[in-house]
Length: 134
Ligand code: CO
Image 1 (tube, rainbow, N blue to C red):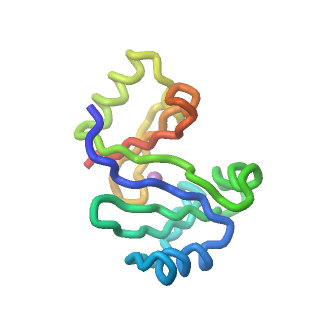
Image 2 (cartoon, protein in one colour):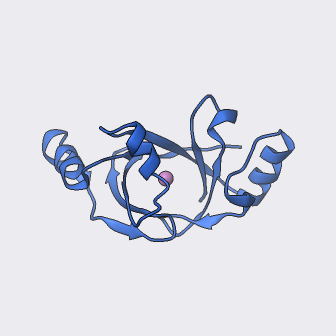
């Protein structure tokens, strides 16, 4: 069911410092920040030859990553995103397998303008999983 690794998301406490580190220290192709008010984050995509890194920084007062950064003040891996062909069929398959779908199970439009869903980390070895329909 899952396909390619679309991105690995890293929550960062200082977006400018993280951009500079990926651009200057690691020599990566770092995009411009995009505000995602529906998701409570500002994102920066970093294009790698085989996947992307998504830097996440809190946006607004009740950002879903604020608590994560409180627990991980220097930042950390927040989620991995796998591609699927049909997000509704994937959701129904996962629900049938007993996996918990976050946010009421209805896809939202993600940072690439495509439908996404998140799966409960306790069902997946402590990893928050994002599914993106491509
Ligand atoms: Co993501």
